[in-house]
Image 1: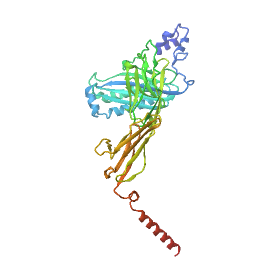
Image 2 (image 1 turned 120 degrees about the vertical axis):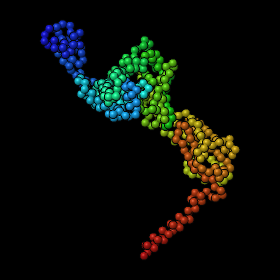
Image 3 (image 1 turned 30 degrees about the vertical axis):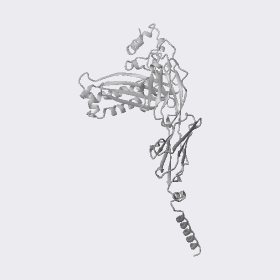
Length: 438
């Protein structure tokens, strides 16, 4: 064998199985990062289309009870371990191509490293999420972030560790998406083992009886339905389409927004996404994805309505004692089902069966909304105050009611200032006339 081939065996021993004869090295072309001469080469991704890429990685550092207490009390000599490790992980993700020779430099749009101290199991759990829009994935950046964060923890805490008490383990790619390949995600059952979920023999599909559009009002809880048949060992993930953010995977949540949770029940094939206290920014298309090959997904559009209740009359109301207070609350629900309305007086729910009597409610519910009319007969002075109509689906509305004891409403409304205003105008006119003829 020639010296060239010998050198190639020396530096690339793993390619020997691809050689069929000493005279031929044609089979080097089957290795993506080795050129025809057997030298290391970066893959040319120039012909690939740009796409949004997301990768999530995870790892653990076993630290033992002593170091666990030091971190919890922030008494580690070298400083705040979790904060320093988080920054180290973020910096490492941005420098991955400098650390791993054949990685492409990428313009990352988002890097997040989260560290959680588990005081019961005496370990630090590290999760990284990296995103970009480019021609190749960000798996290595996510894995590098976790690795360097773990090494930083090890470095800062090793002085207090007994032999064998610290261990870095379970660094693995949890999830990736983007490009032409299907969404990949580790099954919960294999989390920490580095194994991919296996495909089952039956065809996986979505139930078609789940709605693909959902409308809720601000402040309500939204439940986006996703029912998957024959899931097997595959994984269900929820993705927000606007930024391709992986929100959940199976029962694991990958967003710091605690309003997002999975309401899953494997027995009924339900993997629903719940969003509490919905805000206008939550309006988007959400995809329930299954990591089949090719991947399958079901999109659910969430529409958020900002609905304001209206009371007529809308301003302050002045009536005579003994008259009837009549207030009408209108709620235009648009795409929402009719809503129940609750009336409050001075912050307390109005009791229609109370000893006062003479209080009634007329409610009409239709396709366009709900109308609720509050009637209070024989108004008394203590019926004055703030009246509010509220519903779980809308922003409440209020009006101030004044019950007058024999005084004309106009006098109360203007506060007796009409004569004063007229006198003031007259004085101004006299002043102007006097100035003109001087």
